[in-house]
Length: 382
Ligand SMILES: NC(=O)C1=CN([C@@H]2O[C@H](COP(=O)(O)OP(=O)(O)OC[C@H]3O[C@@H](n4cnc5c(N)ncnc54)[C@H](O)[C@@H]3O)[C@@H](O)[C@H]2O)C=CC1
Ligand SMILES: O=C(O)CCC(=O)C(=O)O
Ligand SMILES: [Mg+2]
Image 1 (cartoon, rainbow, N blue to C red):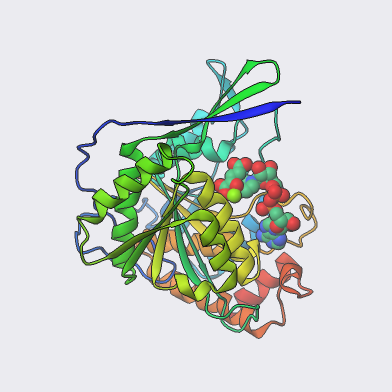
Image 2 (cartoon, rainbow, N blue to C red):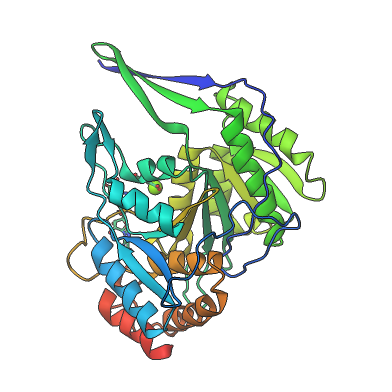
């Protein structure tokens, strides 16, 4: 019988990290936190045509189809953006999987990218390029809002959760090895530095979108050292935000309560280690109609990459059946981040009106429209 053991390592180094300041990346708002000088400030500038250049990674599976819809809608809405499409087919560099240099240079130059889903082989094969991108650009916070779509009926009304996932370490550190035949070790790495960084961002983000409560989701009853460090760091950071209510909750209880009464989570921002955030965000998507609807932002000090929560959906790829809304809403978060909020508002209204009308929605939402027909319906409303 094979026996897989997970070893937890917690860094005890005491951080003297400076107070991190963050600009909120909201789906609807572009509020600056009270502490100004944002860590996630958009550093890009307009090119000689008066447009911003944005790196586009179209991705695998449904990626190219939904990317095409986003591009068509942006073009119809006359968003002042020029896309720089890059290839991220992995290369081997010093024996390790790496992103091609041209793609890295493009993101570095433009400070911002929109990304379709990238498939990861199961078991053997290259490491996740999604994770590689997050690590390469130190995109420490993954912001995953999940809100009910007005007019689209689900068993739950008025879902409004915001989950912030630590994005660079934890169970996703990718440190694994075989101890002896049949015994494998996987290391969950938690550091005070990365925890503090994402937690501070979480508090500042909550403040800037008007949520008065931060809840840290963990399993420190079992992973006493690693999740314990995340929780104790959170308690320290919370002292700098006395105006924000702070508490903690065990992950299994969060899952139960979320699918029983998601309204409980409306006033708060949830912050959690990497794997928990991955799983809970898919679960939350299920509350509002599925993965076709939920966006995300990977935030770093310099660059930020915006992508849907979902993956490459191989089961529907190549059929023009995918729902591009999740990538579209991610691109709306991107526009907010870039200070192009007026364009975001206009497109978001067309998206929401099309969804509420229900005549041209995709199969995942119970409609008959293709991805292309849905995109055209949005364009007609612009
Ligand atoms: N950030 C990323 O790029 C992510 C990449 N992946 C990768 O994607 C691949 C496929 O993973 P799965 O487990 O199948 O998850 P998935 O998220 O691709 O699909 C799960 C289910 O949701 C549906 N779905 C997803 N997006 C949809 C959309 N836009 N419209 C309509 N239906 C949609 C799919 O058809 C499927 O039934 C894997 O290689 C995985 O590693 C998975 C999650 C995130
Ligand atoms: O990189 C992958 O294959 C999956 C990543 C994922 O599920 C996520 O980021 O939500
Ligand atoms: Mg995931």
